[in-house]
Length: 518
Image 1 (spheres, rainbow, N blue to C red):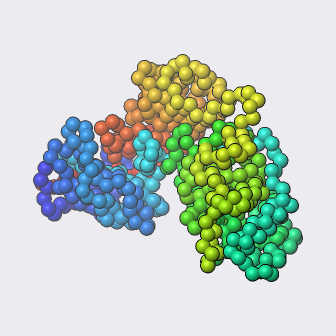
Image 2 (cartoon, one colour):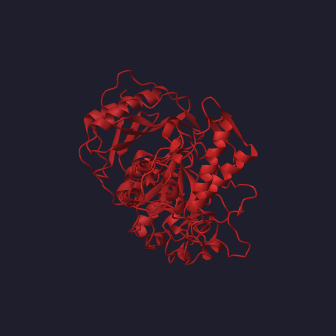
Image 3 (cartoon, rainbow, N blue to C red):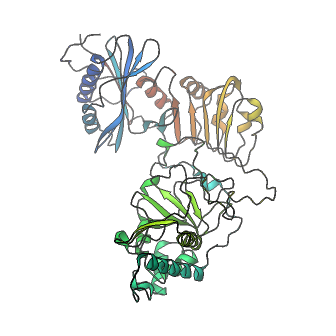
């Protein structure tokens, strides 16, 4: 299709079935300009071209142009996300912090668009999610897990202090320190606070430190920052006031735990057969005490899972989206492992700068264990314990669904089936918050509206229409997902009709349509 080089603004859209406030003609004109460029760059045999963008005050991002061909295949366009869409965000009157912009143009010159602050194309989900209740957060899988079988701390305060001193003496030997340089902890480490001051910091933390780490802070206030010894696996041992700062700071690495990024059956886990750390992105019981220079941290875990111990050491942060990594059962054990590696000679160093890299074989990824360590099987005790609780199920037929009836711990279910299934067995599952039916044929979709705890529901457009006609949306629904059709993303008109049918904030949904001139 050939379009004029200088398109004129289209008229303001007003879909008859979804009355809305009058649209901003400047936004309509900007969308038409972008649609014109998309049509010009489309390949032969194209059926539609689409763009999905997310704009905020900092800029614009999202997917570039995607062309859908007549045979259903897709081909990426050469046009990047256009700057005109940033101006759309600036002109939008919904006062959104972020704005989704979905734009589609067709070979006959039609274009349509939707803007919304609450509808987002999920990066890894089945389609678009509409956040109906932003005040309701997704359930934390870690909350479903039982607490530790053994609630006693594994650390030993006196042993921790002894191991720290032995560690420093070994460093003195490696680097050839002059006699008298290491007579007291304060000779090479920052001076500690007194017991009352440490107790005051613990009150500010809002949680007690494990006994062994508290004992270490009684002899040194960390290891000196960026230029310090980096005693814990090349991480900076933080001064105690920094523990408080991290405790109350924005835990940015866990910021993606929202409905916009939520998918059922998250693989987040410590990877051990019997979990030691809870399957969370962050928890109040995780107290960061050491940091790397790459956005990762060591934390003492005062809220462990069934196979863990309070005060155990875990890795969290930027590179641990898959789940926390269990490192050692205590700070004491971490020091013991590092000292053993030094005594074996498993290290490398730079003597002039007194830098030391210790190869203690510490776990780096979920599921890693230290060979020969106590409980290296992940905490199984060989007692023939029962199967672990089921939190997430992937089912393919009625027989599997029937086996889940009234399940006490079941939190989320994905159904994939070509033969129609019944949802009746799920009505009395007390913890069921999430259901993905987008890949299933369902006989009684209206049952979803009668699951009292349901917060997240993913379905195809025709399933949503059937549910709304028969029973309406589930009363507690916080996030609805419209699964994209096999031929590509849902159209802006389909998204707008779906959102209105869910009874969300109609003032948030703006639908535009028009034609390219000529």
